[in-house]
Image 1 (cartoon, rainbow, N blue to C red):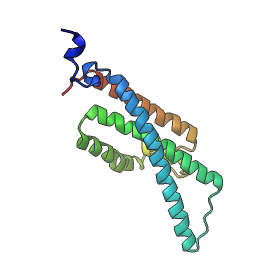
Image 2: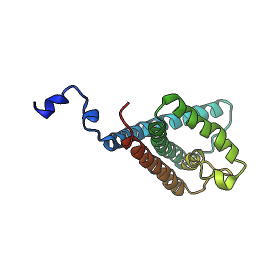
Image 3: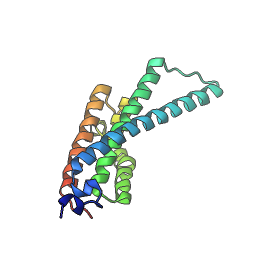
Image 4: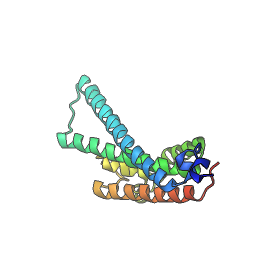
Length: 171
């Protein structure tokens, strides 16, 4: 019997598991989707905020450069955080615990870190704020450094996800 006919009904990723390639392809996909979602979200917030302030008679003091940094930083931050989410989901495997872990980090752990500004500035949420032009205590003032650190988090967690998925059996 021909070996190719033995696996004819098995989907390709499971017949010849190249899980690293699948995870990398998903990373590209979620990065692009995250960039688009970040761009739409920051654009919507900027537009709604400016309109609301204008309707209340409050002038908006943002320049075109400020809006550009907000939109580009929000887009890049959205893409990188999407890759982090993919990696966490690949390692944990179950949807609910993955979401609980991510939300617990963003809502509780990062808020606890605000009392330690030297540590908080390196948390993913603070790095995204830096990318989008945030200017407050507890975030980096250099968006390029924030982008590199956040990208390092995404790449590092993606490497862990590839390693974790390559060593597990198909359930």
